[in-house]
View 1 (cartoon, rainbow, N blue to C red):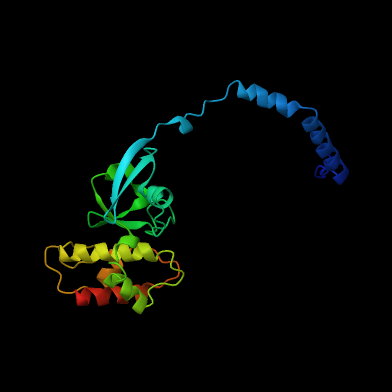
View 2: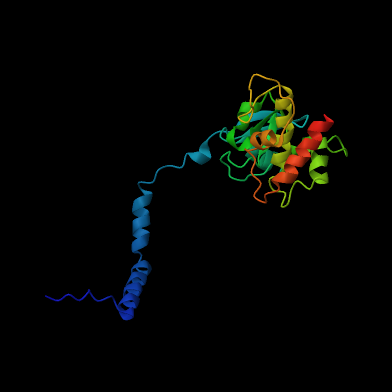
Length: 219
């Protein structure tokens, strides 16, 4: 009995097989296959979906749009309106780069549809400043150097603004020792927990926490 392993194909055999495949392509066989598949193709209905008119109030301005109902709020902001401050990171609600404020509450714009927000007051990073005067959180991030590449920064700032509003409203967090008691002071642990949905891949977290502390103390 021969125990030798089967011989591997030679380089010449591989080249010959490749040449044969090339001849089949040149002979028109793939064309025949494509024609056969075309007769059984599934019609493309995605491009034929009707759009619908949508009016959004963003940063105190009204925008009248015509959108595919499946358009996310993030894509409407970036592609239809041109407000590119809100960033698309993971597009799955995991990184927080697209965080904006809707009726004062922070949300991930990539996880909601634009058509759901016609009666809402939407604020993006572009709408936080008052003219040439920066929002206190924006100024604090600059003063504390709370960013490096800056990609996550708009979401971090919007999230921090919304987070402080939650604290003022008495919302507890998973780090709260007593969820029924009013918070005596905003600790580093509380800030890190409440901002845990916003990822900074440059790891500027200590400076972000410091910036939030500054604004919280001034408020």
